[in-house]
Length: 349
Image 1: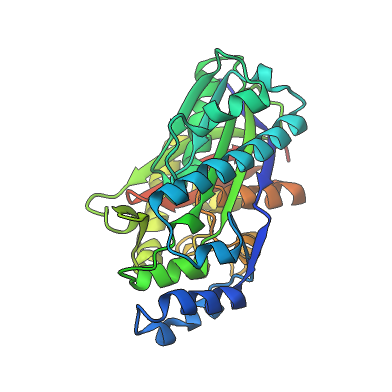
Image 2: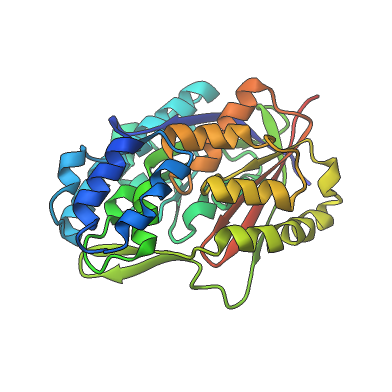
């Protein structure tokens, strides 16, 4: 199989910082009146393992009802800015120009952009007019891992191609203030906004090789995680059973995905996981029989940024690679479908 490597990795977040104490106060002001059990659930904010998040807009913007038109306008502005920032940083680290990119894979599930983000970025960044565009919607939290796997497949099939992978999510734009349920309370305690980008090229250079990728989707699990369209925009679907589901199902799924690659769980030096939430991180450690604290980089990303959906796993990868990637790592994420995704990374010892 043609080797494919990640040559660079960059992250970006919007400038509006929300600390968790303020987040709880704002959520109570916005949602408390419409959800009578808010006081009972207020402990979620303190137990989420989050101190700060970055938002597309200052907190005051969220204090007023916003239509889908207003949310889309913000998405098109802020998501494009973050796309460009992350992409430019990734290209600079890889030492290549935008006109050397042959294909762009864009993953985003928190807004609608047609033309998609990479098309809107072409004039600002100088991509070639014949660059291949692959916008992907609907992967949710699994998008960072699944999208990077897709980008690797494109680079492998088209030998010599340079592929730019960018994922941008603005989860805060899905704030719902009407028909509030528990999932909405949890989402206001958990989600933030961010972006990440990588340059992928065939060959064994770069900071790690992508040795394989795989996905598993469980049947009859469409109601675990996702979006539902409402008059004001996207409304969150978030099942409280996700940590329990991960404890029960995740190890078997990972084994199923790694076996065709001749990799066993106990051979993996480091699992690099999407930190969906503090309880999910704990559940993954339990499911994979990892020593407690093995996923502390995941907890630190969650503490500093919250769950940014798809980009979050790449924030974790960035921390791990700066400390030094071990010979064999496996990136993992869970997302709508309900789907588990893995990416196998091999690095020089």
